[in-house]
Amino acid sequence: MYHIDQHQHHLSWDNSIPPIITINSGEIVTFNCLDASNGQINAQSTDEVKLKLWKLDENNYQYAWFKQNQIRISHRPFTGECSVARSLNGSFSTILPYRTGENIDTKYLTKGAKLYLPIECKEALFSIGDEHAAQCDREVCGTTIETPIIVSVRLTVRHGDEFKHVTSPCLLTQPDIKQSTQYLFGF
Image (tube, rainbow, N blue to C red; front, side, top):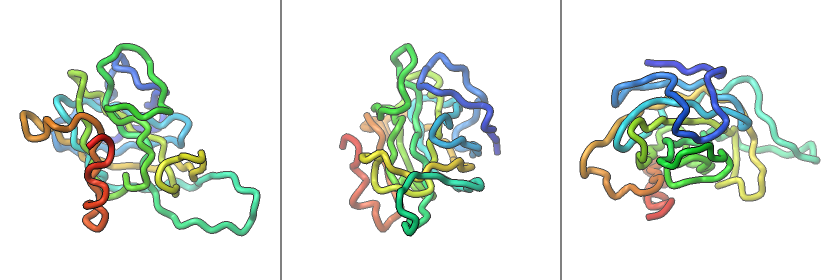
């Protein structure tokens, strides 16, 4: 298993950023992600990547801003950004979602979920970050509880025609919600 530390991060989606490590298909990588301000990390792959969230271990704090003191929120950690690099050259904002992933921000991207991402670049350049302790589905109101989390993922490359229909992020979640979300994001 490989480990990527917090100091090994970048602040934009850019296919010219060199990979931190190179892995074989099916290997597990643990990312010690920063909070929402800058927790995107690289790995290398080709063709199409299948991501299975293996484990999410939180660090010591979470934060959100509320004026009331009596608000209680269920703790449901997930990762907000998962992506492979775009084929377009240049630096792209981490705020927007793109067809290769990026700022997906769905609460279903948690332990046990599988995410399929279409690869546009020869060296996939997988990144992950923007971890949350809790949030409704998407950040439409800008409210979430940000937190640094240690995330372990298994990255598997899919070759050939098996998943050639994946043209944007495809999220498969736990069996109890799989039916309602398997065609989310462009299907």
